[in-house]
Image (tube, rainbow, N blue to C red; front, side, top):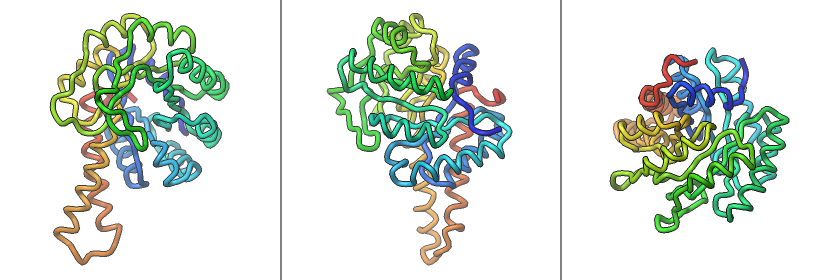
Length: 284
């Protein structure tokens, strides 16, 4: 099938009240695991990489692996660049085969966010690439982007509406009280704000900071228009904890294939749980 734009996938998800999970992957095994999970669950899938992972693995390596995965798979797969502030890197990723990109200009004043987003949307539209933008500031740590709790800002519903009208961006990540990383306590999601944003804009909305949000809150977010949920920290932790456990039990083992196999399985099982939670099983 090959890699596809996530725009129609997410539009379909919002229209029919389910969410598609975007998994941050950092290794070939993590990518294989979530693809296998999607195949077995008959779910559409978004493979996602941070700027840090792009720098670590290389754009061409990531795009080539994702392309092979998508060609072999029987479910639709998109490849997304998450939280990028660098216009040149966004263009490089689109040229390499990414089918979705996030221009994160949320740290700038509203007017500048509009202009930076419009610039990316114009190029992406010609290439049939989805674009995601952020309004407000999601707290927590995402690679090198650190937003302290006191600096996290919630998205304004009226601004969300104006932003969509002026930029034409096909997907929007509004800050509603979630955070990147694992929550220390219960996340403080502003559901009334989300409801108002969803009432004003028709584009698919994106839930950032999806690791560790209680199941009922995720389901409520999805029912209110969150058509994409990002999962990064939980996936990374499951992968790493599995390897740690393996070496506790097998301290002298040196074959990477031996410890990567259970790590891959841990990621796959977690991915299936998240797909079930968002209601995308059987939606491919």
